[in-house]
Length: 154
Image 1 (tube, rainbow, N blue to C red):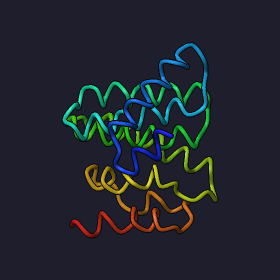
Image 2: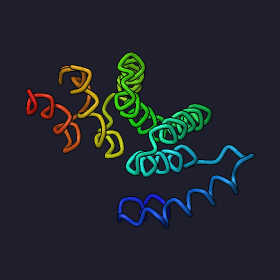
Image 3: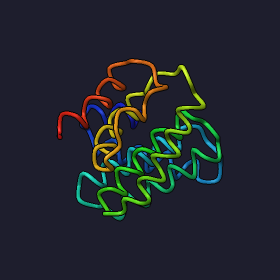
Image 4: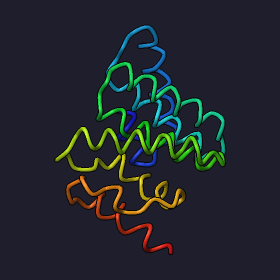
């Protein structure tokens, strides 16, 4: 239940649980490994551990890519892009956002998931991307926020 613990603000329990889950499944292609790495990375980043966050972002992309699961890959890509922005690496962030937008194009008709919508507006704004990048994404609270955010900070 690490994801629920993360969103509820019980970060200590979330880190303990994700560490346990990652250790228990180290040799297996396990669903949710990307999510567990993303949760761990988010907490590490919030606590000032940018290098640890970057490592977990990279591990999340690797785990999601191996499984080829867009519901895991999208959040991993956008979190890694946010960490790249925080690390002053806009070229890497732009590449990750481009890969994410390509993924969203492949999933035409799918709504923007909260785990993507959470970071996407901030990343798009930092990169100077405009809402037209999301033309193929159906309206939802998260896609509406992603479209509106860059305008609100101009």
